[in-house]
Image (cartoon, rainbow, N blue to C red; front, side):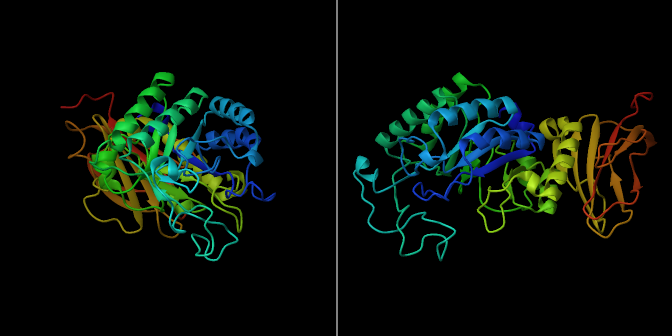
Amino acid sequence: MPAHIRQALGFRSVWMCQNQPNDPTDAVWRFNDLPGLAKEASDHGLTEMVLWSIQPGFDASLPAPFPHLGTEAELLDAARLCRQAGAPLIPFISVLQASPKTAGRYGLKVTDNNGWTYHTEMLPRWNPPYATGLSCVQVGPANQKWQDDVAEACKSWIDKGFAGISWDQYWSSQEKPTIQELTKRIRDYARSKDPEASFSGESLWNVEVDAEWLDYTWNWGGYADRQAFVNAFPAPRPNVNINRSEAEARFAFMDNLMLNVWPAKPDGINGSERIAGVAGLSRTLKACNGLRRRFMPYFTDGVMIGSCLLPEAAPGVRLTAYVLPDRVLALVMNQGAEGPVTFRYDLEPWLDGSGPVVRTETTEAGKAGKPTRSTMAGAVTTPTMGHLEIRAYEWKRDPAKPAR
């Protein structure tokens, strides 16, 4: 997994348009907007920007970008500036299906309106029976000509500076040639150009296989308890889609999930708003990113053990712990009303050797208290905490007292 993905709080998704280039109101963002969005993303700990709808979909040739978003030269210039800002552009590609325009290349035909047609002005918004603009038929993955077309198209975009790719519907199967064979062709070439090139995608049903290939997922859905998965699998980092929910952003941060931040304007599509336009979410992301940076080794090299530090339930407390060989970190959230919270802990099963240890408390704002001597098991009562406020408690070996 690339270092900037292991270290990231998350990524940002930007929905460029609704695939209607002849509509003068269709563009949500243009290519010259992207460097500013990348700077804002990087400031919030988001280390990639996944771009939806920069070009016609369901075309394995990955055609030129929509002209109403800007020129290809403007897109390439934006890509360069976004890399410099710390949030490289990652095209989200939909090539597993073929449109009526492209299906004939593979001896196929689109026979009905089944597909992924959508627009905010339609009722229903997705795939209404009277609209066929994004109708399609499945081609891949076990089609050699299609695989060759996709590999060549990806190679062309990688040569232009787009080393990372996010894949719509990562469809693993045993039928030859497999999507894993195609992925290897793409990844090997991308890594030859940029060792930090990422490959993410929508993992559909076989994550044990996908874990070998995806750095993070781009799946639909909000926060869910994936602590057991994070404990067992080093990759992919599961994503959580964050529109405005500060609570879900905090839960995802605590569990080392990959935040997919894409706030929407009122009545707008996902990814149509600046993060600064949602002030509470912006503050939350900056606070979570600050704590993540401060305690980075736990998230990149530690073992997440969830609430297993607790010998008994702690009402009103949400706790996620991480273990390194000589230290333990507990992220503690107050899920109740404003006030102090109390929890019991037991380090014995998790910290090699035996005491003494020192404990340090760090506020959500990143202010660390003075390290104090601590027992291997006991109880902690926090200072007053607001609802959903997070504090970090770290136990380390006492440097002045060798372990027995």
